[in-house]
Length: 88
Image 1: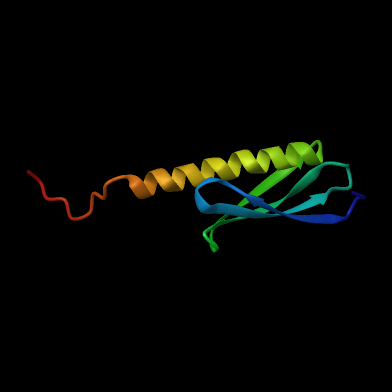
Image 2: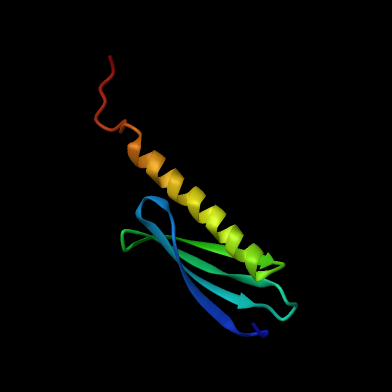
């Protein structure tokens, strides 16, 4: 990838999550970009990743952070709601 070129990738993640990743090589030869996170086709968040030394490192970083984001959302959905709870 030449400087100023942009690459767009689609990545499947666990539990129905996916990510569209826009990566750009910076003028200093590093990789940075944005990953849009989707759950079953609905946009649920955006991650920004900065200055990774290689394309492989950028993809690895995005996969790690996207998986963490997805796991956190699944845990928060599974937690019992405190709304409507009455004091004992």
